[in-house]
Image 1 (cartoon, rainbow, N blue to C red):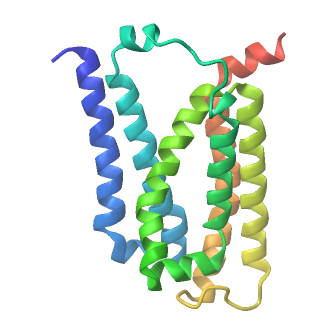
Image 2 (cartoon, rainbow, N blue to C red):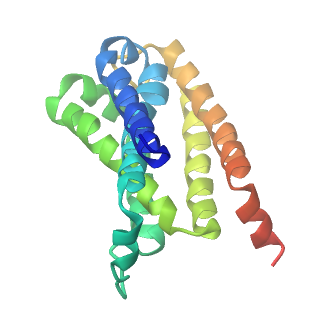
Length: 200
C-alpha cells in the first residue's frame, strides 16, 4: 500500500475509534456531567473531523485540481460553517441539552448524528478560512467556554437534573481549562501562519 493510501486508512481508523469510544462507552461517559460535556461530545466532533480528513486525503489530486473553483461558495472562507459549529457548541453548553440527551431520543439522535456532521463541517471550514477568521471564532468559543464555566462554578444550585452539584463544579473547571488549553494548542499548530501574518 502506498503512503497516501496508508494515510487515508489511518485517518479512517482514528475517526472510527473516536466514534466507537463515544458510542460504545456511552453509559459511563454520560454518567458524569464532566465526561458527557468534555469527553463524549468532543469525541463525536473529532470523529467527523477525522472522517473529513480521511475523505480529503483519499480524493485524487488531479480530479480536485481539474474541477473549476466557483465564483461563490456556500461556505465562503469557512465563515458559515464555523458559525454553525459555534452555535451548536454553545447549544451543548446549556444544561437542559445534556438532560434532554439522556431522556429524549430525538435529542440523543441529534447528538450522535449531528455532532459528527459538525466535526466534518468544522474541518472543511478551517481549511477554507484564514488566520484572522480562525482566531476570531476560536477567541469567541474560548470566551464563551470560560464564561459558562464560571457560571457553573458560581451557581449555588445544580443546573442539570441528571447530575450532582459537585460534578457541575468539575464541568465548570473543565470548561475554563478548555478555554486556556485550546488556544495554546492552536497557536502551536498555527505558529508559522500566525508569524507570517504578524510580520506583514
